[in-house]
Length: 384
Image (cartoon, rainbow, N blue to C red; front, side):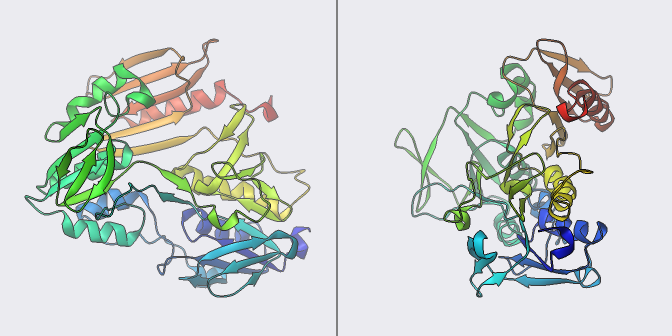
């Protein structure tokens, strides 16, 4: 089905990727019906502020500046997708079946939770951020399971609110598994003020805290779980689409005829990295819809370059800005560079000396330079 014959495009998932898909449809000349389906009752909003400005109280909202009325987009909020029948071009929902001609899957991911009957907090929605913010008061004992990106940012906000913070990390140091022991050691002093318990695994949530792998219970007033997330693909299990840690899509983000997937839920093939990538960060959700929409409207793809970016993400924690670009393997040699103002950078390269990734702390201009170098050094095979 060509773009001219798509009378109705349905976008399932009202996050950043879904909103950008609606914008791209109009920007690329689509004049038919667009419906945006969202499980939450809020219009699309930005998620990075949830664990930053919203959690500290610096701002109360993070709505995306998109005028859906001007775009002619029908918003159907508070409606959950429950199934998909590609042969019939129908999405099953909590509010009845919705037929479509073209489908954009942008349902994102859901946070993992610990087992147990006790109360635990995750940080994925606007309601999560507002409710947790109310609990972060001076003297409150906060236990955080997981010392990754969410764990570090929640710990930052909790400390700023005067909470007593305990963070449980199964590893030898936060981010050691991702960046290596030497890099993790540079970041370890940032956790001063946090009761950081390394090599400590949270097994379940109890009525008054967290049960640890040694059988002991860590008492806490608030338990926050930050142990990763999984793509929201449960509604697609009987659809016939290929699923494996996300919706499997090709270089143009196509899952099947008339169906594309973007954002956290997509697992695409990268020619640049010669592997399938699962990137669950803001930059991917923001940039992927341009290619996915073009693939939906122009199935022949004679004019569309494949989606093959240099992955990028950032985190604000303990007064520092971390920015990472690229994709490095554990065996890639690393070099360090430091600036007089206190910034530092770790760069990785492959066996041929081509840059593969860079981690930059407190110097955005250095990250930009590194990202350009990585993109040039690891050009997509489609452009060689």
